[in-house]
Amino acid sequence: MNANRRTFLKMVGLATAGSALPWFLARGAASPRVVVIGGGFGGATMAKYLRHWGGNLDVILVDRNAEHYSCILSNLVITSAIPVERIMLGYSNLQSRHGVVFAQGEAVAVDPSARRVTVRVGSDAHEVPYDKLVLAPGVDFIAPGGDYDANLTPHAWVAGPQTLLLKRMLSGMSANRTFLLTIPPAPYRCPPGPYERACAVAEYLQRRKPGAKIIVLDANPGIIAEPRNFGNAFRNLYQNVLTYVPNAPVSSVDSAARTVTTPVGTFRGDVVNIIPVHRAGQIVTAAGLVNDPSGRWALVNPLTYASTVHPDIHILGDSQGTGQPKSGHMANAQAKVCADAIIRAFNGLPPDPSPVTSSACYSPITSSKAAWLTASYQYDPDSGAMRRVEASFGESAVPTSDGAQQMFQWADNIFADSFG
Ligand SMILES: Cc1cc2nc3c(=O)[nH]c(=O)nc-3n(C[C@H](O)[C@H](O)[C@H](O)COP(=O)(O)OP(=O)(O)OC[C@H]3O[C@@H](n4cnc5c(N)ncnc54)[C@H](O)[C@@H]3O)c2cc1C
Image 1 (cartoon, helix red, strand yellow):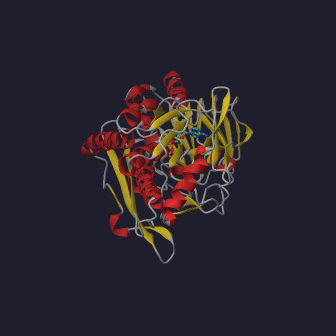
Image 2: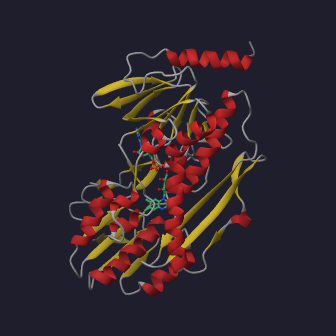
Image 3: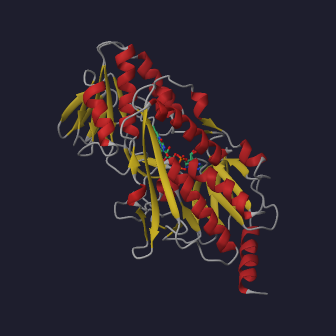
């Protein structure tokens, strides 16, 4: 028996040790098991491609929700341009077409030495054995100082109930009132996203709320993505409704009073949209995998997305700290690199030595015109890091109606590639 076969059997043996699990978590075929935590763009793609490329791998996808609300296009739900159903993505295709086992539950702890993850399903906690664990939980937020309550001053930066709450607040806003939006320091998910939201809300106010204003408090020194397109929109299209304030990090929030204090002053809004500082998803922190210098992200090997703390745990999407942009498109690309590396490892093969990833964001600047931003990243063996391929970097010269059409086509492609 060769070493790979022995390793494989040992892994299966370890993973078989669990018992008294509900059917959907119990061990099926004697194949290596990969448990994927988080069914967003990273985790859903991961589960699908593990099955697609990995044959009979035992793949369990765990998400706390029965379906995923896409953040992509969610700014358009807030302004009532599209219905919320447009961003709801289910897990049925992953199950019926690809043989992924989906379990609705909350991962609460990881035991790396025993290779088990604790998943809470309803009031029961189950110890689920794995051979490889993939964490793709998106982001968590660091609550600002003061008296902050996300139900009074929503972020709407994880799509779902928060998106609908902000939509209700915006539509209920009276004329002549103020919408306050805060932008956290980079890195955060979707670099153009907050500026896109500012444009979407500004246009909505112009059309539907005479005399209303939006104030944008940016923790960064200036617009960090597509500065030309957003800067033009702020200065020209929305100059009568939008005030942009750079270098304005949030020091504290009083959600009940709807005030935000920054080093450049205290601001009050009638609707206050606080996007707090980001960090890796809670389960990544709970597993002790946050280890970058900022104390917010998990360092991984970009050839495999294996944690630099525990090599059998892989972390991808917004929680990882490779320096690549935090986007759904990027999470989808990283998942494919990671799935390929895990399948190769199960077969005793090294990972692809030169992976390439890419990112794209489309931003509606008006209800009929969108701008875009894209870049590819390639592994640099000298530094061991992913580096931006300069020739691949591009952004649209101006927002166009073609861009708006492409935005929906691109979103449908990402939705289908990840969840279809
Ligand atoms: C307004 C806005 C616009 C955007 N526009 C774009 C765009 O144009 N292009 C683009 O590429 N990206 C865009 N993004 C960014 C994109 O949505 C994120 O980068 C992407 O969703 C990250 O994927 P992920 O898999 O890391 O996390 P997510 O997609 O957030 O998925 C994480 C999943 O994990 C689950 N989860 C978390 N913790 C647990 C746990 N402990 N147990 C069980 N389940 C758990 C959550 O329920 C969730 O379903 C936008 C984001 C926003 C907010």
